[in-house]
Amino acid sequence: MPPPVTISEREIAWRFVQSSGPGGQNVNKVASAAQLRFDVARSTSLSEPVRARLIALAGRRVSGDGVLVITAQRFRSQERNRADALERLQALVAQASERPEYRVPTRVPYGQKRQRLEGKTKRATVKANRKQVKE
Image (spheres, helix red, strand yellow):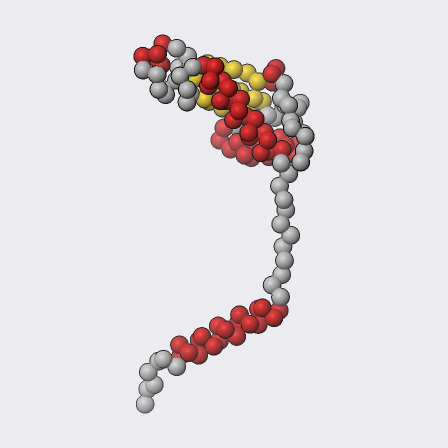
């Protein structure tokens, strides 16, 4: 297992906007939703393969210039939304830092192929014998 990746606080930019989640009138007055911006393409704390996997994992959350945007608005308070966004970033980076296991393709043995084809032939003859014979 690779060592955990640490991301510098300087590489993360925060923006706080009005949330659309729970909170009643509070939602209309307070900017409680947290938007985390992390420049994946220019990050110095990630290796090249991890960077590529992170961009692939994040999908639409990565902009054209390689900036990952995570918006958290599940909670009523700004602090909890900020912590939620950080946890989601950590989970994404941890998932991207795991090297995928490559499957080694195998061949079906000749005996199994022959057995399958013989079974198909037998079944075809059984079905063919059900047809009405024309005289």
